[in-house]
Image 1 (cartoon, one colour):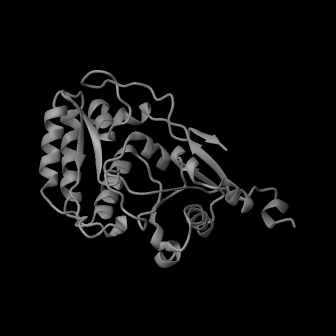
Image 2 (cartoon, rainbow, N blue to C red):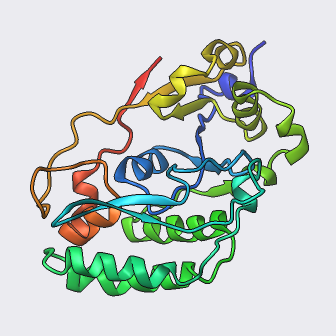
Length: 253
């Protein structure tokens, strides 16, 4: 059947979606995913996993990599979802700011970027729930980078209880279908479980983020390390950060 758009010689609008969990001050690849999408969906209705990126990330120090970890309440809450995970100690922010100060005071753009960064961290620390705190920081960093991708919660799109009955592929697929996605971009780790054929059957293309080939930037403390929090990039190069990133770099299936 010929659509009205085809009759008028216009192509139907394409919509690219990224679905991911919220992370604490994520690395640059996370923000490249965001900038590659027409919409970001935060999938924080799934189970919180310990020792994962949801509540921690790394920075570089003179003594090697350092984990900055948000303390959360986990006792007796093994199956709790990310968006119900409570931060256990609001004083985490002072410790994290102090660690960043000690590690980056010699960074090229410390004086320019740190007041904004520390204000953003202190503002986010007012949030009692991990997911809300993460998302507040993600939005702040996107604004700093000039990224305007709309961000929505999965539970604003599909019912939480309905999603809990779905397997991982079905949940991602139904979120994509609900927002009219024609393309889904995923991190490469999902190759281990995602059934791409289900997306293809519904006319949704799948592509994998390509994290290879990132350029080096001026970085403190020894051998270069890409997989650290984006605060490392921002404090070292300031508002030229996006020139060391590579949005829209994806490999089709």
